[in-house]
Image (cartoon, rainbow, N blue to C red):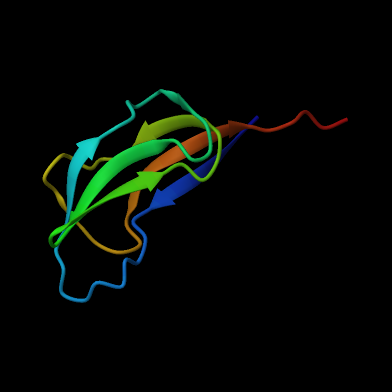
Length: 86
């Protein structure tokens, strides 16, 4: 059985900055380790990488390059295989 963890746009504490998805660094369906970069977001003049917080299989949400994002928005999920119950 799998568990799914949402990947959210963090609060960058940059009031009034437009948040734009500028690049996917990991393909949908790719296996990732915690700390691997998933995507790049432009916040005003700053380019920020969003990293995986868990290891598993990453799946893109319905978010396209150059889409404007909001804090807290889900940009993907990480599927983690749950340990079997004994």
